[in-house]
Image (cartoon, rainbow, N blue to C red; front, side, top):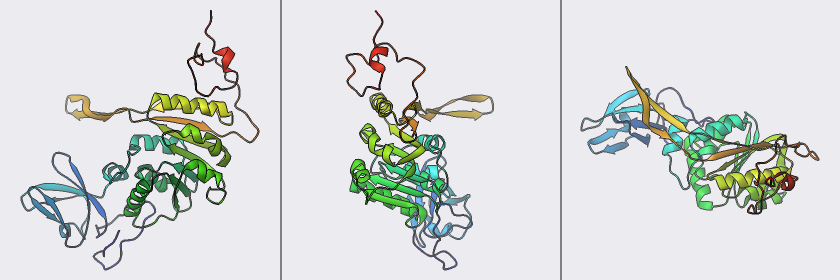
Length: 319
């Protein structure tokens, strides 16, 4: 972020992306109208936010606290707040679909992302999950992000640097194919604690991922369809170097509560994706045998995907 604050100092870089105190030039604010519509605005000295009912002068906000109401020339009121990370992710410019905050929160918890961790992220998209990961990792962590498309990588870099006020010291972004990067000793990270795959065919990368993921490390795959979910889970089982994968889906429902009128709201976020999670075993160790048999016919003649060891006989339908 650029510009001078009211004391003549450059706005400071923040590894968390969070600033406190009076609002300064270069910072982002959300202006929310009475209908709840939010506008993400970057403050500039002498700048103006234009509405259908006149403009809102940035100078009316700079140097003052957040949490105030400003009025446009035509009398339209806006509540001014610094954006939460959630606000920034859902309103920032996109080149690809983002991982929504409800899944990002699950990835941080179920993936056990911790400050100082070494994380590999493949499929950066617009950088939404990248922002959430960097906030958790802090300056002492390492986030190695791989994106196949240069245009997506450029958008993600801009979103991350605008949010933090400059390049983040923990972030290393490469453009390329994940398998090719991991096969090149000069480009791949030596070893990582966590791997997060947000890509069309994560099953194609399980073998290479297993080579860089530390024993006990967590693999998280984000996929959109049940077909992708089944294929990546069977590929992980077939590899045998991971624990039995688990799959989850998160659906968010909003509620309205006002006096005696308490009911589900019309808003909410339904299906956006599935998370498949497994942990890396130590070298030479294979997945312990499953305690339950696959459903009859699960790997029958119509199934053409990867076959975990020992399923052929167990999955035959009973006569």
